[in-house]
Length: 103
Image (cartoon, rainbow, N blue to C red; front, top):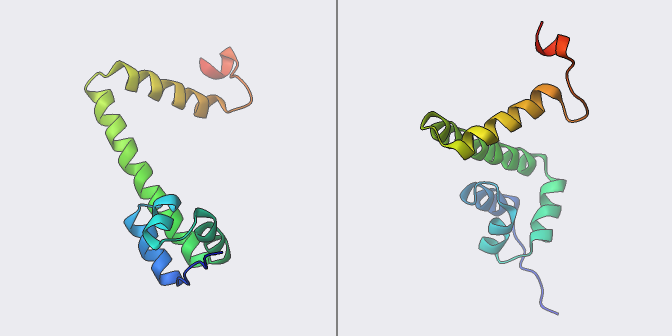
């Protein structure tokens, strides 16, 4: 059985930054399994912070691109945005009453 190379938290942190928080890509860069990187992230508060930070940055980028499409009138982007915001407004479990929707 091949031995997994020993990697440091600093190496994992660098790979997470380069991969924008994609654990599979970070693992590939390091030559280890997704599971190995995931386990190390679970054990390290610092690595968890880096992962959350990079994922938040990617969400902001995706949102800005979505809003650009909405402003350009892209029907799919508009529908997606309305459906997503409606789900957030109403909540996952229920619907607003007419009184709540039209005060």
